[in-house]
Every structure is written in structure tokens, then in C-alpha cells.
Amino acid sequence: LWFSSQNIIYGATGITAFENEGSCSSGSRLTTARIIDPRLTTVPGTADEDTEFIDPRPLSNSPVYSSFDATPSDSFYTTTNYMGAFDTDLWISDWSYLAENSRIPSSESGDASTFCGDITSDTTWSSDITLSCQVFVSDATLTINAGVTIYAFLDDGDGKSPALIVLPGARLNARGTSAAPITFTTGTTLSSPSDRGLWGGLIIMGNAPVYQGTQEVEGITGQTYGGNDATESSGTLEYVRVWHGGSVIGENNEINGITLAGVGSGTTVRFCEVAFNLDDGFEMFGGTVNLKYISVLFVGDDAIDTDEGYQGKIQFAFVMIGTDGHHGTEMDSKGDASPRSFPQLYSATFVGHLSGTPSSVSSDDQIEAMMRLREGTGGEFGNLILTNVNVDAVGVYQDSCGSEIRTQELPSSGKPDYMWFSSNNIVSGPGASFELRPGCDGITTVIGSDPALRLMPTDADYDSTSIDPSVLEFLDAEKTIPGPAYSFVDDVPDDNFFDSVPYKGAFSSDQSTWLVGWSWLADNDVLVETSTPGASSSSKKKSSGIAEPIFWTIIAILIVVVIAACIMGYICMGYKNKYEQLIDQGDILNPTNPAALHLHSVGENGDTENIELTVKDTEV
Image (tube, rainbow, N blue to C red; front, side, top):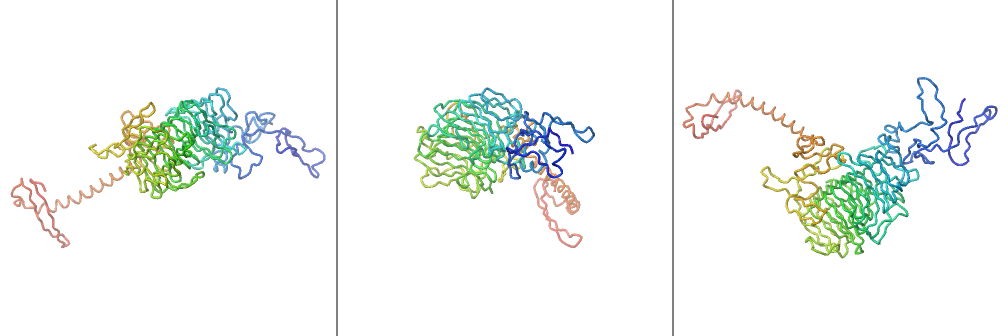
């Protein structure tokens, strides 16, 4: 019996490596091994069947890569240069129980470099990275190159979910492209495409004004944000996707997909998406950061959340709530405290689910509403489309209002102490347009027309096969009846941020949506691209914007129609041959005038048939 003295035995302090009993205690005994930490990536000392996450692969500086024994030289054994079951290849990642239950890293993250630690000097990530702990960027700039994927584990071994946290004064420059987006996602195997809460999230903190001057981000102890620099830049996010996050980051708090806490208006946030987050999608805690072209898909709570005096601008926002999401927006303030929240939201499309039921894990209520505006928030809300408002839900829910003016006539002054909700906004579906709690009067009118999205199921969800959220400009082929989205369009604020467009909602009718090429919907072949001149065919779902299932359905119908026509043609030819013999040409007195010939025939079985033929010229 040979037991190598190079084997590693490790555990609690003061463990007994060997216990030789009885006849094994005399003579040659097993007495020697390396009592040393093998430095596995993430294996808690209490690992059990209820452990949320493990990664049993060794770290690069692990002792398993030294003093290993040679394997027997035969055709069975594979020669290795490490001890234990794993090197960098986690060969159980696609098929084991642990994989099926999202408790180990996925095979996709296997080639990524593992990172854990603080970033205190300028750093560039040019290849895929796996976060194994909470990474803080402090007094430095982190640059992430286009096309890089940042994976993150579910747990760091100490009960905290890995996340990327940019502290005030630091910067994150993440500039992807539509062809090479930057993706933050889980490093574990998905058991379902809709899995949520499998890592932390992306948190950016700045020095812009917030309620009470400074605040502490949920789940992070000792790190504050907020200050007096409203125009500060915390960097750039362009074509950035954050998927499958929202796990507990600390102190029993779920984190949002992208948190912008006290972030200034010098920060650029464009073409960004949060999908399948357990909590909110985008959350702005105070600050003045502006967002453009943002997408939120199937998150567990609120798609867009603002609070603590946020006074920024948002244009072109697309939200799909799904069957168990909660609000499209939850926009709060702190009553009449200063600064009052004043989000300016224009050109947004919110899509509900006609049989959806919210199941948020973090909300203070489960009231179904596409938009929740509360706690004294001000703001401007124009050119919005809310569709698929189900019968148990409402379009807009207001409660806990303050002294702000709530109006549907846009004031020329008075920011931030008013909330304007345009009467030209579209709220469509069997549900009510408003639920206004006591003290929240002032908003009563919207347009209830169907917004005429090109292709949007009433039960739109992550498993929908095809959607096209663009709007129809005209409802008729002659282009004389404008679509609701192109009628009564409000002017946007005249500044250097908002774009003036002739339609409501996030998308136009005459070009492909800005989701093409990089959204989760595009990656999973759900998005139907509107066919436009000059559009790239490589990213289109074909048939000139017609969803493929509909296209083949139409083809099948045409085939049936052709077959039916052939059968009817055969029958009609028989009737023609039968009855043309009964027509006396002398009955047609004037071939230039119509005449009706009433024919009476007795069929072969004795039944009578009465036929009326209209004759014009010499044709029957």
C-alpha cells in the first residue's frame, strides 16, 4: 500500500493527518503528507449539498503544481502536471448535478483569467475575465476593451457575491460596439435562459449631489457616494450588457443590474442593457447622469428606478416586463426634501404581459403597475408608450405624493417642483390607465389607442419566438391614416441631449431598432429586424421584417389555397361543360347588355338545380 508523501491533506487547525490503528500501528506506517492549503479557487470549509457555489480548480500559485508524482506509464492514465482532479479545465461544468443547479462555473468562463482584488492603478482588461470576489476600483481608471466578457461567480466563499464596484473619483471606460459589445454575466451554468441572481452587478459611485449630501450603497459597508460635483465624469459605458445578476452582495440586499449612485452628467451611458436581474435593472440614486438607448428585459423588480434626488435625463428606453416582473419604472423622491428627484423621461416603450403576476423579492408591495411614481417625485414624462396593460394592472400608479404640482400642461418654469405627465402618452390594454391614491390628483388623461407595434405578443416574455417593437407610421397602404405613435407627438426639451423625433416610443418605423446586433433579443434570434434600405443583412431575421414562423404559416396557407383552387376549378369546369349546353344562343338578344339567364336542370339523381348566370357580351 503506497500513499505518496507529496499528497496534500488540509483542514482545520490541529488536524490529525494519519491515524493508524491495530496492526497498522506497528512496523511501516503511513505518516507523511504535505499539510498545506491547496489554494482552490472557491471551496468553503463547510461545503455541503446546500452550498451555493464552489470552484474546485486550483489557483495559479497553488502547491498542487509542485512536487506532484508521475502517473503509471500505460495506456489508461493521462499524464498531468498537477495534483488533484482539476487543472483549469472544470470537466464537470456541463453535465454534473452541480452544473444543473448553477453551483459551479460554466464551461464558457473556463478560459477567462480569474481576478480578485482591488484596482488602484490604471488597468486595461483586453481579454475575458472572471470575477471571483468583489472588485473595487479606487483612484484609478479601469478600461475594458470591446468584445470582452466579464464573468462572475455566485459566491466568493465568504457569502458575498462578486461584483465590480467603481468608487467615487475612479472611472470605468467600457466602450463596446454593436458588433463587439462588452458583457457582464454569470460564470455559472444556466439551468434556464431566464435565470436571475447568479452574481452581483455593476456599481458606479460618484460625487454628484444626492439627498442628505452623502449616502451608502446597499450592501457595501463603509463606502459612500455623493457630493457637489454635478458634472463629474465617472467614465463611459457604451454597448454594455449586464445579464443574470442581482444576487445578495452583502447584508441581505440584492443588487441592481447597473447602479449609478451619485454619478455626474459628465458620465456617458449609451446603448446599455440589463437582462434577467433579480432586483432592479437600472437604479439611479441621486446624481445627474443621463442615459440614452437603454434596454431592460425581464428583471425581477423595477426596470428603471430613480431615488434620492436624481435629476437626470433619459431618452429612448425599451422595457419588457414579462410574466413575473414588477414595474417598468419606480420613481421616488424623499417627499419635499431637497434635492427633489426630477427625471426627464422621453421616447420610451414599456411592454407588459396580459396575464403577468409580479413576484418581486424586494418590493414593498406587489401592486401591478407599468409605472409607479411616488414619494413626491417631480419630472417630465412625454412621448411614452405603455402597452399590454393587463386587466389586473394599471398604467400609472401614484402614491405618497408631496407638494409637487402634478399637471398635464407642461410648465415653463418651476423645476424640480412639478411632475408633468403628457396627455398624449399612449396607455393601451384592458387594464385601467391610472390608480391615484389620496393626495395624488392631477393626472387623468392619456391616449388609449393601440400603439401599432409591428410585432408584439400580448404575452410577450423571454420565450417569445419573435418580436419587433418598432411602430407603424401609417395604418393603411395608401399612407393616409397615421399611426397613433406618429400623432400628437410632444416637443422634447431644447438642449444638447434630447433628439427631436416625429414619433412616440423608443423606436421609429423606417429603420431597424437600435437593439440589432447586441441585445439579448438579437443574440437569441428573437428580434425581427425591420427591413430598410441599406440595412445589414447579416443581422436580419429575414422575410422583410416578417417573423419566420409567420412567413412559413403564410406559405402553408397559400399552398392550401392553391390546392383548393385547383379542386374548385375542376368542379367548376364540370359545371361549365354541363350547363353551357343548355344555353340557347338565341336567348342572348343583345350581347352588349347584361342579361340574366335562369336555367333549370334536373340532375342525374332527380334533384333540381336552379342556376342564375349573368351574361355580358358573350361570356358566361
